[in-house]
Length: 470
Image 1: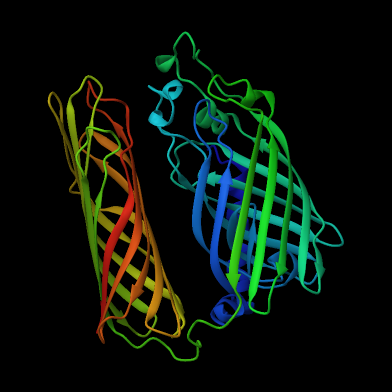
Image 2: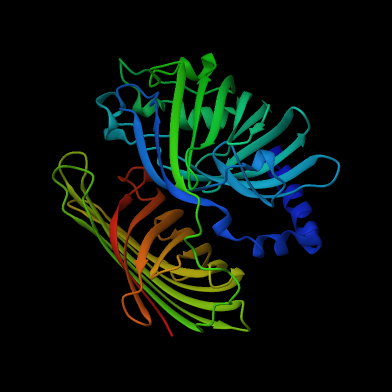
């Protein structure tokens, strides 16, 4: 049996966290008051190392504290762009489990020099983290791709020196990074079948690198905090020698402005609504100039019982259209029906977090001028979901959800990742209307002759949201 070291350590970390839950980890999570955090908005820019591709700018909601997790002992923490939970024994050691959105990768139409290569879409990475907190902090973190686009991993060993001041903090760090050959080959390799004279075939090898970082935070007024981070990484030659890599160094800068007041409800009261109904509709531009507008919709209906338990019935329908190579019109239909059991880890007037697991039945079909992929699946397949919400001391609330599904049918197999974020207004006593953003990525491996081995449709764009509670 081939079991990678990060998976083994991740399992050990999760077991340690599970054992410590009885000692107060779950109680500590439930005792969190998000009014203790500053809420605001952040903007980041990341240098794109792929040849011919432009840099990436992102705007995102942000929660922080003037005293970051490196300088406090709370159960939640952040590290290397990831967030999770940790156990801090009295000895100064730290054991945690982390998850992050990995934005590395490209789409073939990002640059003429990337045309013909398989897309490398965003994904979710998870992994363990082990550290020691003394005058100098030392920690090791590893990440694997939760969607298993590749079988590799990335590792980082960091030395940092967190220092707090009356009005802020500063954290300089140096990191030593290691990437397995599967990781390098997936993100920086060029398959033989996609090789061109100006872009020769390239097979990735294990690579090492070094990074420097500086994070800071300062209270600029009584209720406003400015935070930021600057990171620079120098790649090893195994990455920089790739014909699709344009630079040996990658830099990123992020800035956040947050309000440190008490905008959310107080958490004392428990949620009392036994039933809920969610609906989302989106119309999204296709990814080529000739593509028609794509559509996406989903619904969920849930029933709560015994306070923290719930049963959720959901459905999903999306159409993804594009012009394939040779000018053929191609349309991919994605549908599924879901049944899940959920447990409310957090459940009060201020915030809710529900962890869900269950089964789904999917129907995926692809049609173009020449080929058809009849993809109906009649066997239930597993899926995981997380649903979270925070409620302001007004009619406004924010909500996010993440679904991970395995796909397997006639002529295809793969995975689906669906994420949604929205801002809601309680327009009626039991109904909230909102606007948000959806991200739906499907990675399929086709077994039909004449079709590309990998089919990776991607939806992302604004959506209209409706939620009701009874």
